[in-house]
Length: 335
Ligand code: SAM
Ligand code: SF4
Image (cartoon, helix red, strand yellow):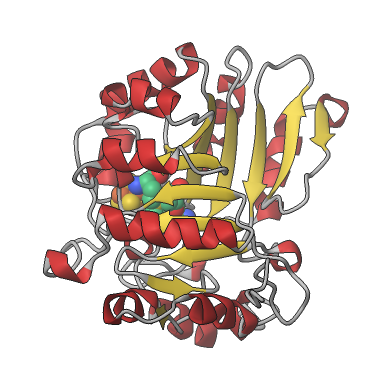
């Protein structure tokens, strides 16, 4: 008899059926909130999952009930042979999606379609090319904006993720919402989170409430319509009456969405992180390479998951800042 459980469930009864796979730690941008200025330590490529290993592990997760896979990074589209891997993952019985900085998406439109990808998340922190370039320390602002239009024109559902930072782009919240007037796009404002080397400090954060204050100061309350959340949603969502698109706020810091968390994170070096904020990792890749059965590890890593934010109870003091900053940089976790 096969005793393998059908689902991955943690100690709080949360079924984990959403896998986020980081395909690479590397990136063609250097967004200052994500990537340390000096870049990340370059490691030998043998330390990272090959496409075959990614596919093997993904299949195991699907056998354990995973229904959704998101590819992320670093920048997932710079992984060698990304086209082939995306096509193969597209054959699995899952909803496949991707989070990208959009620099290369013009080369992937057909691959996305063949793989059955319908929704794409793009990071974009400003609507002004010079500011995009300042934040990302590179010069791809124009290409990113035109590739977002290309995705929309090709029928993809596009969600734009903007990390909101005080004094950097918090003055663009209304511009972003106005962008949704004629574009069927969803903009999600993300609270700036602390990670290793990302120059985070409490005074740069803009909370969900501060973002909403800006919205309600600009729009009449009756025009700001709540959109009902779906199970496992990480954002609270709204749209402005009559606008084609919508907007949301992801507030991991001030209003965490841990209660309904269903996420498993697999890093590019093959480690399971059971929470974005956890410093504990389970090395799946080394077990796989030793020839061990990885299923028990896949299950136990989630069973050990803490109730909320890896056990960190408060985000309101400077002491906790130190804990977060010990975490990997975001480019090595995958968001
Ligand atoms: N390169 C891809 C991209 O930028 O979309 C995928 C990887 S990126 C690490 C995934 C997401 O993490 C992006 O939406 C990015 O905005 C978000 N992110 C990175 N650093 C962050 C931080 N310090 N606080 C909040 N979100 C962050
Ligand atoms: Fe690269 Fe995405 Fe991080 Fe920007 S947010 S540095 S695009 S991984």
